[in-house]
Length: 126
Image (cartoon, rainbow, N blue to C red; front, top):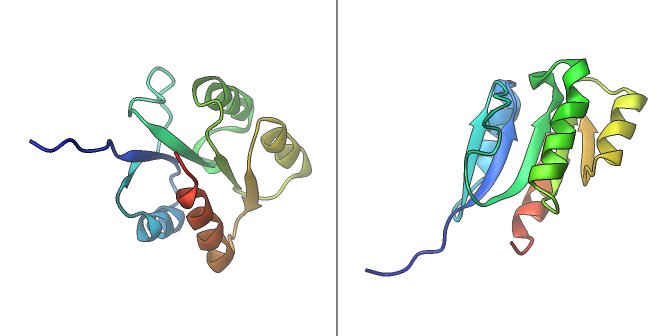
């Protein structure tokens, strides 16, 4: 039996159908998507080999965003973080960047630019 490298996992936290569809259109092996529409505080990182995290902050309440970003920073240190704000807010952007977001944008996303950015993160060495 041949040895196979494990799939690289993109943790996608979003309940936005258009954004989810856009991400699915870009992802190809060796990548796979662990998609969550709801946050389960006890099992946020259930898939191994998470190498990219994409957070759509519409998936959580304003008061929980700091907790979520802290969990990502703690459990996926060094993993690139793409942050999509439901709507732009300067304080929200500051919090995302201070928590290590490598890319920040707000809805509606510029699909062409977003796809280019996402592909650049997918090409990074794991």
